[in-house]
Length: 315
Image (cartoon, rainbow, N blue to C red; front, side, top):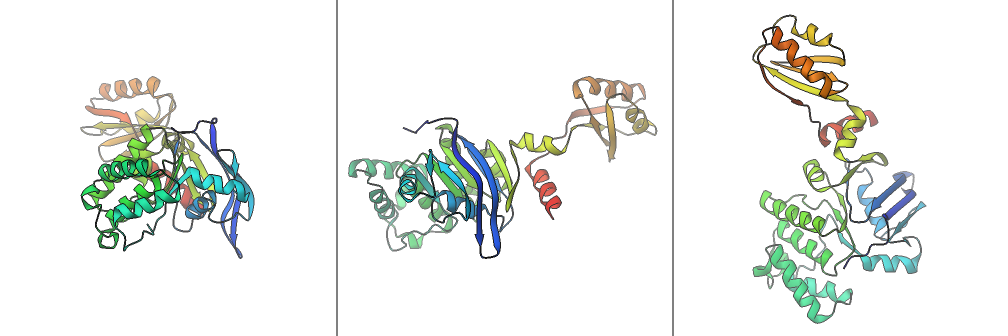
């Protein structure tokens, strides 16, 4: 059902967009593979939405290039072909509020030349999956923001696009609606869709995305959450003890392979080169000194830590 033309399905080279004297996106070089879920995180005004608008052929770049499915976004005839292969969920749903949920989806399906029988079946499946089938005949204008977001999600998928661009898919949603959308995205991920997500929700990015890019006009870093963490921090072992006695910090600090020790309450944060070699030495040293080790494990740093570090350095 989905196209598979090669390893790299979305590629930008030096992609730049200026609005007068303001540079919104600066020299973006990015490669997104077929079937990958890629997330953009960054503050307001970072260029995330502008990037999506360029990739969806809604605005032209000032300079640089981008290709989707081997097609050039800057060539009008190829841009038309790209639009048929993508689905877009903008931050503002932009639905026809006087029309019912079903009529909205039927209208957009017709724009993509989806045959009548196919679109009826597809619309029913989408609305049922998103928990909106019972409200299919109600005017969209009466819906909550979360309900409108679900209809907009269905609209983006009604023609079964190869590429899905989502701008803040869970923004402003209540927890139940957010969970529905998140679970649906996980299902789409299992299907092998190529999905590009802009989000402020770092938890969503960590759960959903294979790789994440941190954006602030320029692309500051890109990688899996673990790779991004590894760019800035080494291995840190967290040792929790019943009590840290005098001399324990110095004793652990002097061990081979230990590069730093920090105390936080009754826990030690020990920077180590190779945990598998050093951790047993730490345990042995502390036990020999009468320490009661309650637990030992790796300090996990999340996207929030990476985000704060990168944006802090940017400022």
